[in-house]
Amino acid sequence: MKDIEYLKQNGIDVNSGLELLGDMEMYDETLEDFLNECETRLPDLEKYKNSGDMANYAIQAHSMKSDSKYLGFTTLAKMSLNHEMKSKDNDINYVNSNYENLIIEAKRIISIVNHYLGK
Image (cartoon, rainbow, N blue to C red):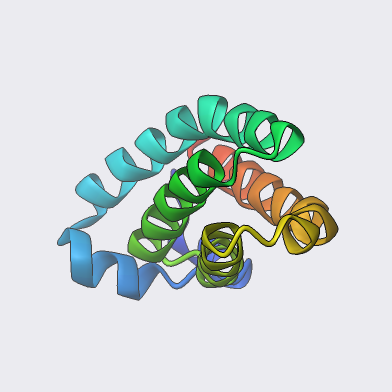
């Protein structure tokens, strides 16, 4: 059985997600979509960072920010917003210096969501 308390204990603002998505069924479906997106989004972020393609990096960071905000991943949303803004400013130093922390938080969320969904 899915336990939303588990999500809340791990810093996920489920209530804000429910305000946007309506009910747990839609929330859970959106969590699945988030996991599927991350399978391509995280490698793409790394590829764009490594090639210095800040325009496409910003697009990926923006998508992660939006999804994170909808689902109540507050910390990941804030970090993604910072990466989006800095990459739009072509601040490659910021992106490189803070990339690892962004990925650590993304993987933390992925792990929590996988556990919650029973994967």
